[in-house]
Length: 248
Image 1: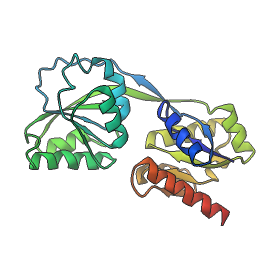
Image 2: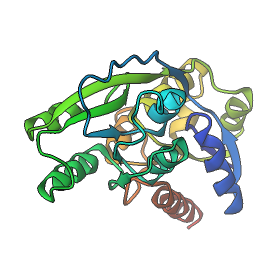
Image 3: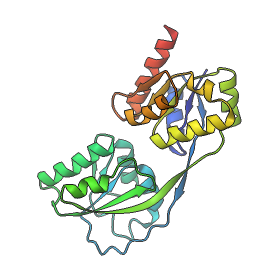
Image 4: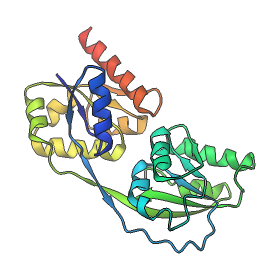
């Protein structure tokens, strides 16, 4: 029996390694494909900090960061994974939020209250093409000027790998891990196109957040579990709970 990981490459490889270390067999079906978007910035805004909600936003512009003078700025990262990517890219000061955009917004606002960041600072938001919430607008309402630059997009993959479809047909998949609302939707579309939607939704769907879970519930999944906190370790704990329930 296998655990299906829908997370895009390359992050899915690290997830697979962690799951295998826990004794699981893993199937990979990255349902979104990373595509960098050309990034141009004249640097005239005089940014006070960078904010990032995905490691992909950093990967997309990593070769340009030094020339743009961004590495000298403090960076606010949505969570530990994104913070790690920022440190790898060369940022020296990385402030880590609690794992979602709301926590990132609150961390920025609190930093201004603590006078770590100037209240009227202009923030550079390195973002994806599809945003789950208007973080720039929310920070704007708090007195910040936010410049949003799209650095990447995640394009849906039309088909699931053959071994994944065969796994669903043979009832060989124990659970599915979902990391974002967009990837959950892409997974459902691909499963529907492949004719395995019923089998795919009949097993536990383990989701990083309630926002992700809503997509699966709306599609008719009856076993939808949500991580206690929006991080991978909590998601793995949710998976173990789902598997114990199935064995009970």
